[in-house]
Image 1 (cartoon, one colour):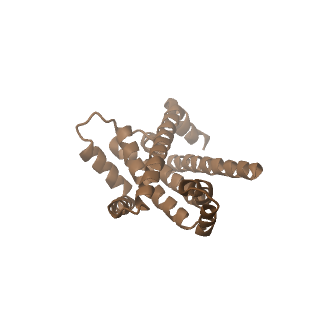
Image 2 (cartoon, one colour; image 1 turned 90 degrees about the vertical axis):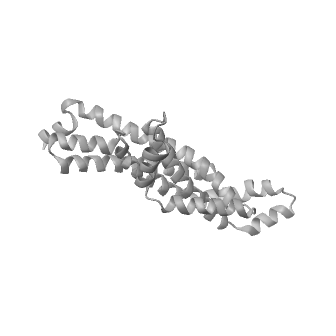
Image 3 (cartoon, one colour; image 1 turned 180 degrees about the horizontal axis):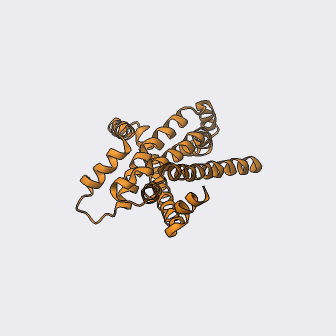
Length: 220
């Protein structure tokens, strides 16, 4: 067993290659999350707009992006939309995942806002709060608490979705694991190690949310 682990993790600087794969995976996940969340907030605002055409546009966007396989969308963007441009593969991946994440975030926020107590908003309005103040001080904090667990799951899903970026020549964690498995002729053990690394990354995400929950309780 020690010899197999040495071949997988140490020989030929495998641990450095794995580390670079982890960095690529985390980078694409983080950048996609940031841009996707910002775009998702905008899409949510359009979805809840009273202007019919804006609401319909956002609804179509959400339906199409949530229903499209991520791999097919990535290949469409890489081999179609951005083919022949100066966009690098990782930039195309970030754009693709950000668009997908935005659709999910928009729906998460819309559902969370719809689930808040509208009676409190009406009470705030009668006390002289502006519409923006009532939303920012009453609705928004409640919506964040409701959306937080689902948003956390969406981040873990995003981390898992990035495993397909090897199809557009990005050397992420999954592609590195595949390469090492081919070189060492130890596919089962190598893949198990790769799955454990993804599991650790997922638990890091859960840990970050657990810390924010703990700090929120301490603060209150």
